[in-house]
Image 1: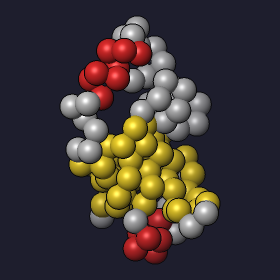
Image 2: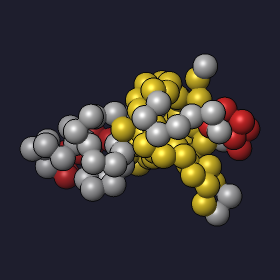
Image 3: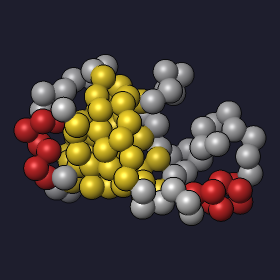
Image 4: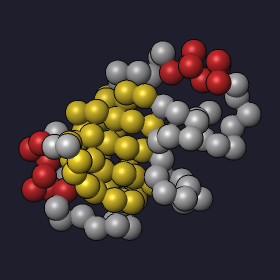
Length: 101
């Protein structure tokens, strides 16, 4: 219900998010980018091949730097994290992210 093609209202999305927020997930997707800004290591993931840039923004734990360095744009990656936030035009955000090997 959180992709751009969804016809679900914003109010319904907000209500549904309450059951997901704070849950730890493990998914697999495609690396869009890995970067660091203001000391936060971020991994952008494309889950839907039709998405222009990314569907997920994962704030990785600092101890994940050595794993993250080995990935390039287009690589498949399995990761886990806590569901934090969602937005219609913004990617779903995860915190406490880890790369699963």
